[in-house]
Image (tube, rainbow, N blue to C red; front, side):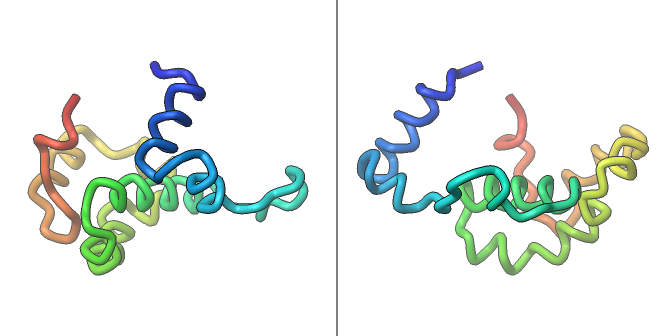
Length: 105
């Protein structure tokens, strides 16, 4: 796994430098300023951000209602209960962006 410093330098180089990257980040002075989010909201936001970095953000926005439906509104307990064949079926699900080659390590 990469260290935070490695990831930070990589992100900064892709954004045009450290200052450009910092301008993209939210200004949070302390943890109390962070909005409270439910687990499914955090998981959904993380997923959306990851897809928007790898695909055209407009495509992700267009498909996002399908993501919410296919991934059960990103409720962790429901997702953990899904059998393996449901996960395999998502590679063919037209409601979401499907590219199995990009999703495999």
